[in-house]
Structures are given as C-alpha cells and as structure tokens.
Image 1 (cartoon, rainbow, N blue to C red):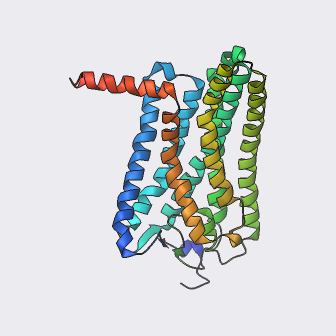
Image 2: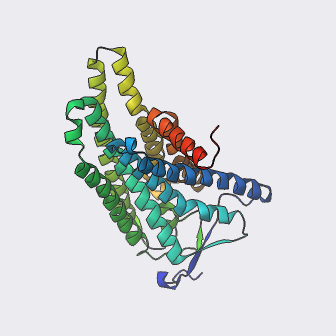
Image 3: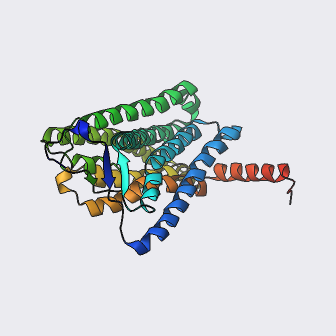
Length: 317
C-alpha cells in the first residue's frame, strides 16, 4: 500500500489472528466455539434467571444481570470473528466493521468497569449500612447507576474510535492482532500518534482509577465493618457476600492494567494477544461461573428453574 494513501481510501484490513500453524486451526476453533457457547448460555442464562425469579429482583442482582449483558456484549464483539479466522486463510475485516468492533468492545468493557464500581458501592451499603440499605439502594438509584455505566461506556467508545480512526492509518493494512484492539490499530498510523496516545492513556487511566478508587474505598469501609463484628458467623456472611465480586474485580482489573495503561511503543503484540484472549474471551465466560458457584441464591434459583422445566416437559423424576 502506498504510504501516502489517505485513510478514506481504506476499505478493509487483514487480521493476523492468533496462529497460522495448520495443525492448531481446528482444535482452536473447537475450543473457542465451546468457550463462546459457555459465555453465551452462562451470561444470557444468568440474565434470564434473574428476570424469572422474583427473589433475585434486588439491587445486587440487577447489577449482576447488567454485568452479564456487558460480558456478553464485548465477548460477542470479538469471539465470532476470532473463530472465523481459524477457518479462512486470510481473515479480512472491513474498515467500518473494524471501527464497529472496536466501538462495541470498548463500550461494553468500559461499562463493565463502572458496573463493578457500582456493585462495590452496593456491597458497601449492604454490609456497612444494613438498616438503611433499602433507602440507600432504591430502584431509582440502581437504574441511574446502571444507565450511567452504559452512558460512560459508550461515550468512552466514541472518543476512542473517533480519535483513532481520524488518524491516517496508512502504514499497513495488516493488523497484528486477532481483533481491532486499540493498540494494534493505532500502530498502523503513519502520522504522529503522540497526542492521540496521550489522550487515550489519560482517558483509560481516568476510567480505571476512578472506578478503582470507588471500589477501594468501599472495601476499606467493608473490611473495617467486618473487623468490628463480634461473631464469626457475621464475618463469614459479610465475606461470602463480597467474595464473588472481589474475584471478578481482581480478574478484570489485572488484565485491564496490564493491557491498556501503557504506551503502544512498549507493547509486545504476541504478549498482548495472549493477554487479550484472557481479557476479551475468557473473563466473560468466567464471571457467570464465579457468581454461580459462590452464590447460594443463584444456585437455588437455578435448581428451581430446572425443576419447573422438568415438570413442564413431563420429566418429574
């Protein structure tokens, strides 16, 4: 491609993918298909479970259903295209599809960032202010926090995509990644990216650390409240209430900090690919599993739905 080619003349990119080893294409396709099916049924199943069971119509589960929606959203933006890459010799993605993939990935991932912060505040209210919980976490507060998370996510995506796709992406049409991730696409620019990188790093850092401050302060008060509890049962109940959320927070932010809070010049694409697999494909599968395994109410609701399904199908045994 001519180095001076204008970005408006680009019609498509080529995604390098995870690997070109012929012997790994089919096993990886099967593996990623299974992972995506677990993600699909796990997250949509969690949403359906919360909608169907009135006992789960509480603030914590409202946030959990939205977390599942965000997981489903950004996994679906990436995984199907990754699976396609294992079946074709050249994995082509159009210019507009690349922008759309980046937009929805960033939008839902950022929404999850703020949803996790909202869930931390909810846990703070439940543990530290149990007598005032229903007046603190009202329906209107929950709706505002959930909608606010999506607004922040989609605004952040607009800034990212608008900034990156305003650059002259003429260095190459080959994206050294398996999807249109921010560092991989910005590396194609043949214009000065310093200001763009600075802006995007600042924006990402603000989003992550704003949420982390809320989470950290919330858990600081939670741990202080737990230490003041006199009964071992109270300790156990409070910790079990927060365990699933803490697990999700550690997994999510560990990957985010590793991937995005550094300039693209210090990125190794091979390392980024492996980290991105975990971040964009594995985490959305893990979250419903984490919340299902460690939550008695979700387990009981699941059993209830299964029993109803058996009775409806005449399999009452």
